Length: 422
Ligand code: ATP
Ligand code: MG
Image 1 (cartoon, rainbow, N blue to C red):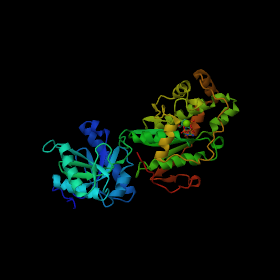
Image 2: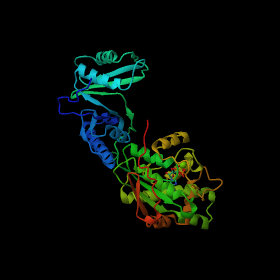
Image 3: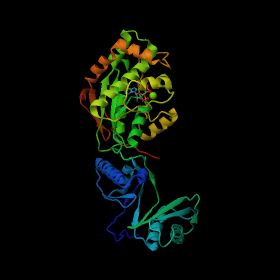
Image 4: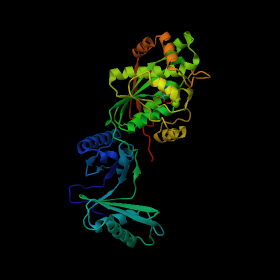
């Protein structure tokens, strides 16, 4: 029993089938653009892993033909815009051929006593209905393998059959992918990336919704824990695994002088966090002004820490006019940690990440006028200007770091690949 992989349509071989999601909602030209970006990203991802492949784009699907379908499926299951992938047997459209491929697949995966179901779908609404098709293929499988049971509710094993105008696709698993929109379709954002848990997740979510990203890290020097810069760089490195074949940059700006100045002028310690966050936002806005990113993304969350009360968030937002996106604003910490684990940025031994400037009792409802008065005393504009004139850049690609200041480069820990399991 061997399925004939030839469909008589010029499409042949056993493909990895890519199902993409929301692109269906788009108009024809937008959809074409999005699909071409998705194809570009998939090509980059395969090339970054030393693989090449051939593509077909029948309506609603991408078929990838290559030598290592298993490896291709694993790689494509981490590409944004993809809902899931399946390694398929490509057949003709006749019931006999579809049945034979389905029975072949089932034969190597289940045996006597197990339950199964066939889920059939057809593109053209002529001939057998989907249900009739499923029943006929199901009974062929049943005849071939002794002792099977049909269970349409909770089967041990499912066989999926799709009949499309170019032929049939038969498969038995759907590997979940992150969904979202193809990377690069939604413009470019600047992400405030820290050594913490939240901002890498916020960055990943922005990428998932199609944004190209540049990271910005504020290095507080002696005010920061010994491992903060290395941990932020590690977050940057890990996130680069999610846009394979494409380089992402992290701009590093020193903000040690800000804390020195707050100390020198004896600014009330309770205002430090809000002043620090306003500073970060203003540095970010300035960089966006010269680089052209369209929005700022942060890992801020409602009520997580004292600087993130609604009152403080509004005082922080007041510092800039650029759009500020906060993808995690309503997340519980546990939800963020779960996602951080799934995307590979959660570190169980992060080291010394303390901020030495955090006061015992930070203000939970700082008044804008009081904050502004402090900033005027400090000549904030001058501190920001000086900080932005002394930036450093670290680029990352496919989980590898390149630093324009090699002496400071933390060693990559080598695991370029991070999995995504739905
Ligand atoms: P995270 O929130 O990412 O876990 P954190 O808890 O150290 O980091 P918060 O005080 O919660 O930081 O800061 C809120 C947000 O401000 C962060 O999510 C991040 O977007 C930004 N941020 C904080 N510290 C830095 C930094 N040193 N450089 C760049 N951005 C930062
Ligand atoms: Mg936080």
